[in-house]
Image 1 (spheres, helix red, strand yellow):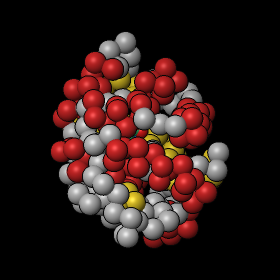
Image 2: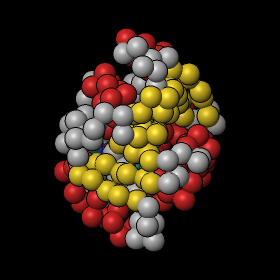
Image 3: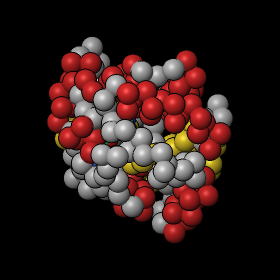
Amino acid sequence: MAGYYKEHLSGTRLEHVYDLASPRVQQYLGAELEHVVKAVQGKGRIIEFGCGYGRALKEIASHVDRAVGCDNASMSLRHARAFLRGESNCDLARMDASRTGFSDDSFDAVICIQNGISAFGLPAEVLLTEAIRVAKPEALILFSSYSPEFWGPRLEWFRDQARAGLVGEIDEERTTPGTIVCKDGFRSSTVTGDEFSNVFFRLGQHAQIVEVDRSSVFAQVVKRV
Ligand SMILES: C[S@@+](CC[C@H](N)C(=O)[O-])C[C@H]1O[C@@H](n2cnc3c(N)ncnc32)[C@H](O)[C@@H]1O
């Protein structure tokens, strides 16, 4: 699964995924972004782990001083450069979000949304550890995954992506509520609120869990040192 986005779902193909969103999926994406914008409003320097082609950064940029997007897919970053041309306070970096190369205590907010934590194909601890490391003391760390209540629309969205040839055919036998498995090796799982809480707790942080629009689940942490 690691590397799947870089090889199969980057640049215009990633944008096509979002173009296929049904009205209910568009509502989910809109509500998720609205929640993020409210949370980061007025912050100084923020970073998005796994920014893709800049879909979220475009909405967020005007609400913060400086927005950095990092992704390991060069096709997505190339597309993001064009997509974000009008946003003078955005920087893009090709980096593995599990070891970004930014100094400790660099950002006023670290976000990773739209179930990015699953897309990375890495143990949650690894990503959350890096998020905590690059966040300043008292900075906001915001991760989101899917609500279990959103399983039906989410599965339909992936069926549409499979029909459009963006991901492989859905493996119906191995797909179970919360986890979509495709026959080409693609896998999209979910991190529950409890799982987020437990991992953050092991890393010395307290996560507040918030469900939005019965579609996304956010883990929100104010970094304590
Ligand atoms: C589900 S997409 C979300 C894109 C974007 N956050 C959005 O909401 O539009 C996940 C993104 O994570 C990126 N990604 C996957 N593994 C990564 C890694 N190790 N480091 C940085 N980015 C990664 C993928 O290339 C992809 O752009």
